[in-house]
Image (cartoon, rainbow, N blue to C red; front, side, top):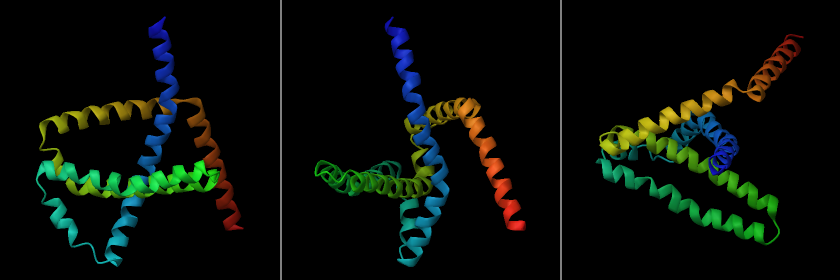
Length: 165
């Protein structure tokens, strides 16, 4: 009975987790590109070669920076929610998630070679990628996903027809 219940909970939790992963997959490249452009405007691109040159454990420690920088922001969002400003607090959480994803995406791109030199990290990374791809394959094969793709294609065709006149 417990196994059935645990399987039910795992399936129930897999959808929100898959949506979160899909958001990060969708946002990974565009957000990273936006961060690159911002770093160019702020004249911070000189940091990238230094980040790339970090040894593996220093590169791993660097991932604590976004979490530490965004923690006060997230706590402020919780305070806003506690003060009755639910929408504002939720918007701050979403903004922190977007900014955090952009920073982590860029840092991971810069430090991936160093991180993959750690055997345990490389093994966990390979397992994560396999698990994530399996979960996303299940989502993409699901009826809601397939129906959403059909609706999106229809919408795109309608917009294209309107543009042509």
